Amino acid sequence: MRVPAGQDLENAAVAAAQQAAELIRGVIGNGAALRTKSSPTDVVTPTDLRAEQLIRRELERSVPGSSFIGEEYPEHEGTAGIAWVIDPIDGTVNFLYDLPVIAVSIAAEIDGVVVAGAVCDVLRHETFSASREMGARRDGDAISSSSVEDLAAALVATGYSYDAVKRAEQATVVGRILPAARDIRSMGSSALQLCWVGCGRLDAYYERDLKRWDIAAGALIAGEAGAVVELPSRANNDLTLTASPAVFDPLRSLL
Image (cartoon, rainbow, N blue to C red; front, side, top):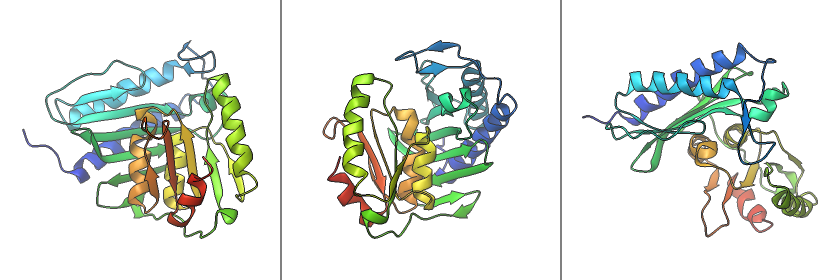
């Protein structure tokens, strides 16, 4: 079986993400928690489930025999040599509170390496996408990370754990960064914050303890747009960090 090229996989991810975004837009303001996961504040809604079902169905049509690694359903192993990593609603708490920072994130992996991905900003009607070694795009137009040269001029974003003990530790880190950077934001969608580093809306983004589906597509997009990307591992205590090249090392030293 022929494995599709990166651009074909990118196109499939874009199409599926946009369809899921349309579904989500149709129920904005009507969200309700279905159950919780890691903590009482880590929630799943019926729309998460419906969106992931739609994405899996559309990707299976595009690439029959696909494997799936999704946030809301068990992994499925196929025969096509392609694994799709899916976050149907990145920003579920925002969705529940009717806050306008919600994304659909889809990445394609071959042998564990992300080769294509798409992140659809549900309410801005923007789609970020990339294929490995082919650059990154927003609605088809090339994007690039910011050229900021100094951490003091950098707008940094982060996110916070659902675990109260870890949140206290994260507050200490924020205390180190605030005096050194222009400012800090936390928007509640790791996928979008990665993409916003890629297009220059943010100069840097860091967070710990993210899941595979949180970052798979966004990290590829940021890296293909020229940002420096550090992926989580045991060695770095599960840190995800992306930043414009000049800001990366100074920020990394504070984490």
